[in-house]
Amino acid sequence: MSGTEPRAAGAEFSAIGQALAILGDRWVLLILQRAFLLRIRTFAGWRDALGISESVLAARLKELVDHRIFEPAPYRNGRTRYEYRLTERGLSLWALLVAIHLWERDWADRGRLPSLRHDLCGGDAEPYLGCGACRKPMGARDTRTETGPLTAFPRIGLPRQHRRTVRPGAAADLVAYCPETMEILGDRWSTSVLVAALLGTRRFVDFQSGLGIAPSVLTDRLRRSVELGVSDPLPDGSYRLTDKGLAFFAVFAFLVDWAQRELPAPEGSALTIVHSPCGAALDPVLFCAACGRPLRRREIRFVLG
Image (cartoon, rainbow, N blue to C red):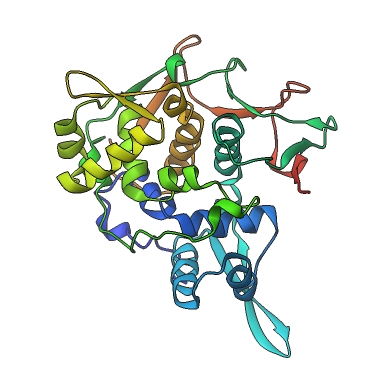
């Protein structure tokens, strides 16, 4: 591999826009989730666990290698094959995936979710989002955003990489993300609309011009957002996030944090989230509800079954 970013030549796109293009796909999220949760590393392992076609799986793994989230490593099993190991960039996505679990725990109705054990204290972590500066719990209403001169949502409008997919039987899979999560985060446009709403966009015309999204696609995504209880339509034709929608802030915070640490972007395109009570730029941290200490990747594990 050359080590260059696949879209480095198109550096007009913000880091957040690039992250949405990489991660706003249900198969990518499921591949990553199985890598973390079940430690799957092989092509056959993902194919069998997800029921994904070999061509789609090969394409997604290539993208994840190109973006330096996975790295291929040879091993022998009769003949030389390759497994896919998470890089440091890939491993740093753990907090984003736990934040998705946090939202599902509080808002998704799909039966019993696996619990998250904090090995440091032995308790059920029940993680919550806090500010790394003051260590206080926080949510969307506790923050404000500061944008650079090039922080604009047209920079999220990356070319479509693959079709929107529907995964049959997802509702019965208690390990995978719930169908609601896939509706919202497993589709680039749905995620982009949610991110725009978290940043204060309310009117149809502003979503359309800001995202560069086709009116028919935007109409569909806003309709589904209302049906899922993520937003409410207002009498003036605008849309307001519900508490369920605002709860996605934790996912958004870790998406922004990962994107702006790991992905190249033009100067002036950064987004700063400020924790209003303490005035510090947001350093999102997951804390353990049992002991109050910050959660670290090597100190937590999901308890399955």
